[in-house]
Length: 350
Ligand code: ATP
Image (cartoon, rainbow, N blue to C red; front, side, top):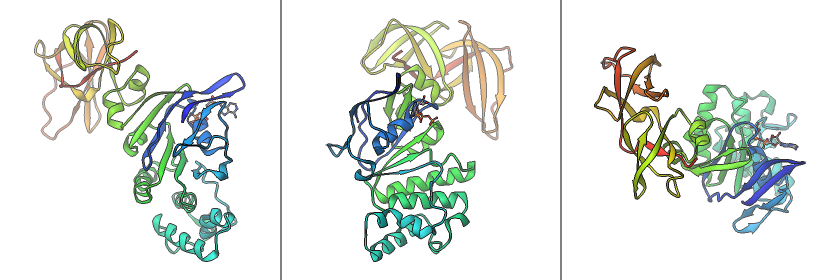
C-alpha cells in the first residue's frame, strides 16, 4: 500500500499509510476499536476506494479494480454463509460463480473439506454445524478459489475463549499449508502476538510501528505501542551519553541505566524509557540499578507482581515467575533495589 488515505466526509479514517506486506506472510493489523483497521482491509478488498494512494499487488496497481476482479478474498466476523445451502455448496459457491466445471469444483471442495477437517460433512446443511465448524466452512469457501491474499476481519471474535485458542492454531496451520498471504485484523494484542509473522500497530488511522511480535514487544517505538501491547513500566530520565545503538540515561528516580536507542537516535534530552515487568528483578537495596519502597505484592498463580514506589513518585512493577520452592519476598514497606537485565530498557521516540 502506497500513501493510502481514506476520508469519510471530513473525518480521516486512514491517514497516509504505506505498508509492504510480503508474499506468504501472516500479517496482522492491530489496534483499538475505530483506529481504521477494517477500513484499510476493505480498501485491499476493493469494498472501499482510497481517497488518496494506491493498493499494489505484485507491483500491479489494483486500486481501481472491482472486488471480484482482485485475487483477494475476505472472511468476515459473522461468517456470512448461505443458510439454505449445504457445507459443500457453500465452499464451492465462489468457484461456481466463476463458471468452473462441476468435476473441478467437486475436487476442490473435497480438498478444502480435508484441509479444514470437515471430511464427510459436505452434505450437511450448514445451519446444523457449530459456530467453530461454520467458521471453518467460511475459511474453506474463501480459500477455495486460491486467492493470493486472504483478508480476515476479526474472524474469531464470535467464538468462546477455548475455541478461539484452537482456531488460532488452526489458522496458523492453514496459512502455512496453503502458502497464501493472510492479512488478519484484530484488536486483541495477545492474539496478534501469538499468530503473526509481522504486526502493524495502528492508532487514529496511522501505522505506529511494523515488526515481528518480538520487535514490537521488546522494542516498542513509541508510548502508544508500549502501552497498548502488554504491561510496561515508564521511567523518565535525561540522556547522559550514547554509543552506537545504546545510550546511558540518568533516571529521575535515581541511578543510571543503559538503554537501547530508538531508530533515528535519541529524540531529546528529556526522555522516556520502557521496561517490561518480567525484564527486571528485585535486589537488596543499594545493589540494584535503582532503589524504591515495596508497595503491593499481588499473587497471580503463575507469577507475582511487586509494586515498587520510586523516589520520584512513580511506580515500577517487577514480575517474578512463581516456583514451587518460592523464594521469600521482602515485606511491604521495605526498601528494595530493582535490577534490570541486559537489554531490558528501551528509549521511546516520543
Ligand atoms: P473496529 O474494530 O471497531 O471495527 P476499526 O479499527 O476496524 O474498528 P474502522 O471500522 O476502520 O475501525 O473505522 C475507523 C473509523 O472510520 C471509525 O471512527 C468509523 O466510525 C469511521 N467509519 C468507518 N466506515 C465509515 C463510513 N462508511 N462512514 C463514516 N465513517 C466511517
